[in-house]
Length: 383
Image 1: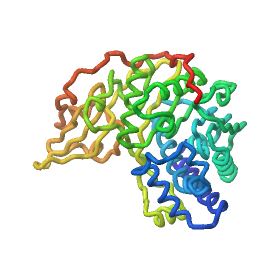
Image 2: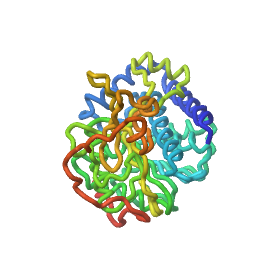
Image 3: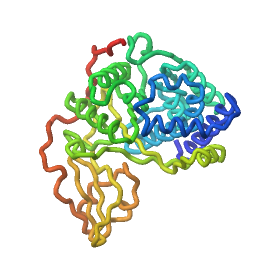
Image 4: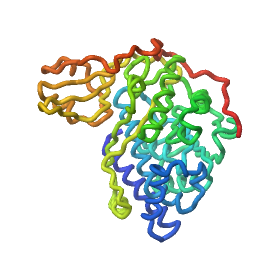
């Protein structure tokens, strides 16, 4: 799908989100956006799992964060297509913890048509608001199922009857359990993947914050240890190099240019402008052969030492430093965090590969291999 068509659809979604929020109540939205922003950041410990049932917070989320999430997910899906990780056409999509159908809206923005769609969330009103946005933008979507159910309940209450091509779990895992509890998160992904057709994909996104991202990195190592193929952002490291460092976490930036005037006005009122969106993610393969990864993923911003020498961190089979003499190639220096660059940048034009970081050996030598499907038979405990 042409990039300009995707951008036009993203603009239409952002416009429809603001319009739907205004339709719910004409009062200013910005104060509730600021309140919800605090609950997502420095006050997140006080955020209830049922915060979307609060009408004011739901309206703020609908107007402000749904366009964010749609842009993030669409950006990751576009990148996966460009990198050759997704070859789908009018996919059947399962959106877990969907809220106002963020994953389905993003999938429509990328493909222009969905053969079927299923959204699962605790909040029925949030699901219905998302359906209203789908109608408002004229989305071409096949049968749409809206299921209000808890993901930690029996899968029979929410799992689709037929296999899907793509599962999206956006900002869900951080609400499933404490980040230190790997088991519930892994069980949810195992169940979700068991409903994906061979050759399908599972996309997981999490906030680009230290705790949530490092929990996702730990989940990545658990998946890789069981032979699950992690296509992105990883490039084949047997264990996540950043987990062996202190305080680092993997995330990337998604350009957010498709913001119509009504949305930019809301950003200005809430004092939360966003030209780029940060996100942590995993893209998993289900049941097909996976080619060995090549290229390096840029995971840090541009650094310049006192001598004027430029450096950037990148991830391949290990964490490396790309170093200029003294300047890096503009292709490397100007690329956004999360971009892929060729392996040849290590030696091209005087750049060199520094010693691997960290110095500790990898904890496991088991890499992703396909064909493979996540283990079945492990269901989440009902609360």
